Image 1: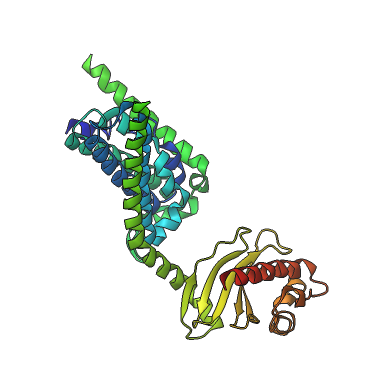
Image 2: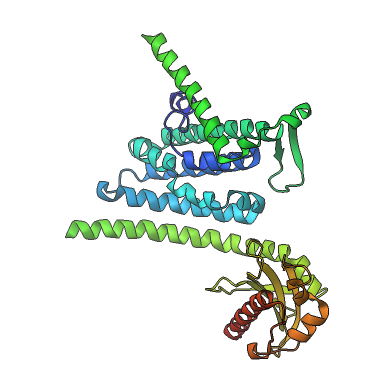
Length: 210
Length: 169
């Protein structure tokens, strides 16, 4: 449970460990893409942690990195094929970033830092916590960016893009949108502010303990 | 030495398992992905062959001109190809239909933003008919005077389409 909670606040992979930022910044333009990417990363992370933890005793130490890469790349390709087949709209939106999950440092980072030393169940929980932490981060950034640049936050049915699931916003603000936030500059600004907030919270809780 | 072989064997086994898994997943998803791709193009293909039956033909163009190839009604081919004409920001995308004898039956521009009244003349019905329809080799295809950029782009498309056709057949 502690590992699971760690992924959110204290060791949030994006805001505190600064891992996997490339995809976080690029795909947080709207909620749909962010949620899709978050779920894909979580699935890959949980499965890769589970498999790497399963084979941790038979994997020779010298070639553990290539083995991890093969495992992760296989999982990413499987997820990519499934998304391409069943959720084509998400596949088009994520583009190259879907296959680039392979080099998302969160996944290799957790394999190396956690899964190779721990049994299967804690590894799965760690993967789930970190994956949801990543999802939480990318969704949070995407909601702020989408709201500031369009005054709305909308979620569509990924299987049928014309079907709107939920849409909240303040229509009165639609005249005062800041389109800057839909570009990459907005991603950096949003990210920096949230990361600073997280650093503040973590420092404060450390001081409290002293 | 012995250890190196053991390590290589381990990695080999891991890679083999992953290959098997990928092959299995691909065998499930490939037909679905193909059907979806065909569904997307179907509206365009129907312009050429109303109520036709289509299937995707596997073809990879090294030049990137021919985007995709479809077999229509079991005998004819439809090529989707792209080339840049006068407007460098919006390339021309065209469908070229070729019948079983290898002659062009129809050409449709799916996307083109050529100069109005100059380049766009290439896509007029009578010019399509006189320039392309009925032609079976690239040497038979003429340029339209006054619309050099657009006709050369179309010629690039045709060259690659004929190349693709000879490879597929």
